[in-house]
View 1 (spheres, rainbow, N blue to C red):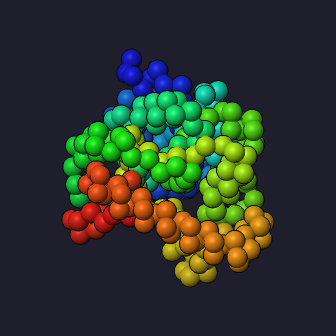
View 2: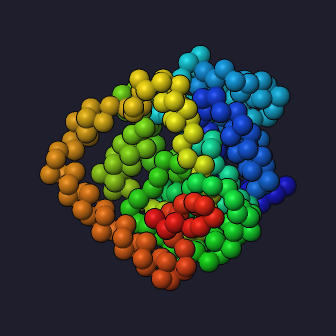
View 3: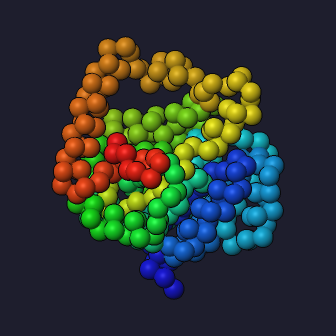
Length: 277
């Protein structure tokens, strides 16, 4: 039994086609010591072999939807299927290194946090992922960004669902479900943080890009931005104040992290170089 088997968590991965990325993600979880029983894959009406993959791995908990219900509905299905203390919501276009899940849980429990996200590197996979991830998590373990999380991967304690409910399945929110949930959590006084004790590589929202490309220009955005703003009460003054405040915070985080640790919690890999964000 690996150390990851002892973690009281369930990983929920919603998928809509992109079986290549789903397979890569699953393989990385296995290398990191996660058991199939700890994984829930919500198949949102895929037509590319995803169902066959899940049938070939019956220990993965699979939920099959006849059509694409969107992230919010899939996240909720996965969370409701879990009895664990922690639910990790994750894109399928990521790679997870050894120690990532342990770092998330250790940090969250030590700091008594409610929602936690790992550091990310996006873009090209042209570096030694395992070696870089191990060094990054050791070097950046003291780095954190308080008050924020991101939808690529975030871990939620069960008490959060008890306090504010599950994710919004409104189809008009496509792409904004994570932001809506984090806003709700902050309003309820819950604690969100991004930590350097955990790290993953994100190839870059491949499912959303694929859906847009398949529409041949008919779909510019999966969600209705103006509808989302009205629903969450984001008036123009509030949006501008948030943009200014977040811009200042992001600049501070980027420069202080790079000065202290040599890297940042949000990076991009482009043409063999690190871009610090």
